[in-house]
Length: 361
Image (cartoon, rainbow, N blue to C red):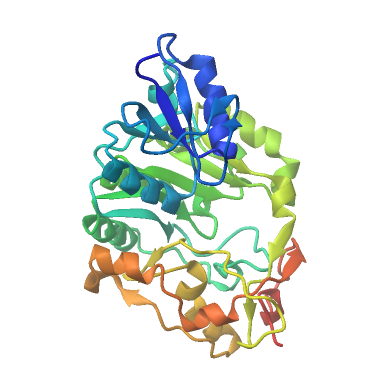
C-alpha cells in the first residue's frame, strides 16, 4: 500500500470509522494506522503511529467533539497534511465510497473556524424537563421573529471562514410552524456546515410530508434526545425518519434518565462545580454568550426574582470572530454557580418552581 488512510482519534468514533471503512473502502487502499496521544501499540488491529510520520496519507479526523476537530485540523495543516477529512459518523450518501458517504472535505474551511453554535427556533417546549439548561419551561409560548433570528445566523456566519456544527433547537424546534424556513435559510447561509435539529422527537411521527422533504433535501441531521416519553415511541420515530431517508442521531434513553440540576444560588455551594454546556455557543435576539445557561439567566432572574450574575452576554454585532473565540473559552461569574447535582429525569409541574432548576444552598 503506497497511499492509504490514517485516522486521528482512537476512540469510539475512530472504531466506528474503521468498521465503516472496512465495509466500503476501495480495495487498492487501506488504513495505515491511528494517531492518538493517549494510546500506544495498536487499535482495531492497526498500529498507533506518530502524527508526523505519515503525511503522505489521507488524514481522516475521527473524533466528534467540535473543538477537537478544529484543533486537530490546525495541527495537521501545520505538520503538512495535504488531504484532510472529517468522519462525521453519520452517512451522507449511499455511493459505497467511504469518503463520499461518511466524510467531509476540510480543505475549504479556511483559518478562522468556529467549532459550533446554536440558536433557539422556539424558546418553549412540549416536554418541560426539570433541570433544563435552556430554562424552556419558564418561557412564554410566543413564537420568535423568524427574520431576526435568521439575521443572527447570517451575522455570525460573516465572522468566520467556517462553522463546523450548527444546532437548531429550543425549546422544541418542531413546535414552530415556520420550521421549513429555518431549515432552508440556515442551509443557504451555512452550505458546508453539519446542521442538526435537536428534538425530543415526540412530534416526528406526525410531521407533514413537506417538513420531512425539507429535512432530507437540506441534508439535516435530526438529533433525538430519548427521554422516557420519547423512548415509548422511539420505533415510530426511527421508522418515520428512515422511510424519508433522513439522517439521525439518538442520544440514548439510558443517558437521558439522569439529568443535572445546573445551578446553585450560592457561589460557594456544597456541590462540586460542573460545566455541562462548555462550547455550546448560543446566539439569541442579537446577542451571543458562551452557553445557554448564561444566555437565558436573565429570564431565570426575572421569573424567580433572583440575582444570579449575567456578565458575559455580548452584542453579536460588536465582536469579530477572533474575539468570539476568546469569549467562549473565558469563565464568567455564573460559572461559579454551575454545579454537579444529578436528579432523576422528570417534568416540571403546571407552574415551574425555582427548585426545578437550582438549589438554594
